Every structure is written in structure tokens, then in C-alpha cells.
Length: 90
Image (cartoon, rainbow, N blue to C red; front, side):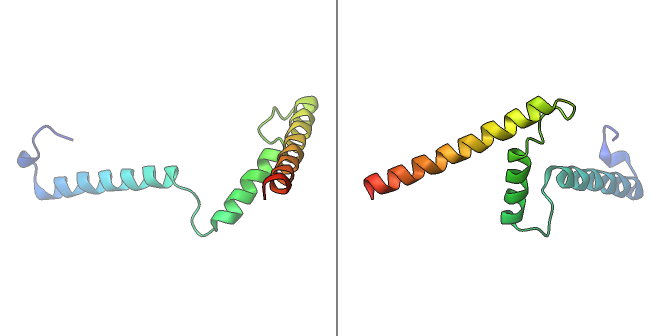
């Protein structure tokens, strides 16, 4: 943009405003989640990715299976603790 918008003609100001609006829309689209899917489906996909070890190095099978086993055991421990607390305090 030029320093003083008063010195521009209306077409040039409109063009710059349009370009800025398009840039803002692209930034908003890049930072937003996918539209048209429910929150439950998005969370289920994130959980599936997490428990499958998708964030591990793809060439290292030991790291992938280590993450899967560790995350599976943590899930079992969580539900065990949840059941224990429910039986004890409810």
C-alpha cells in the first residue's frame, strides 16, 4: 500500500481493499477447521490418529508400536481408575 490513501484514485483503493480482504479470508480459512463435519467426528479422528501412533517417525516401527502400546495401556489405566473411583465414592 502507498503511504497516503487520500492520494489514490478510488479504483486503486478498491483494488487494495479487495486484495486485503482476500488475504484475510485465506488466513482465516487456513486457521479454521473443516466445515461440515461434526465435533464428534473430528474428535474421533484425532483420537484414532493419536492412538495409532500417527505422529511417530513412519520408518521406525519400534517407535510406532511403542507409542501404540503405551497409549493403549494408559487408556486401560484411565478406565481402571475411573471404575475404581466410581465404585469407591459413588
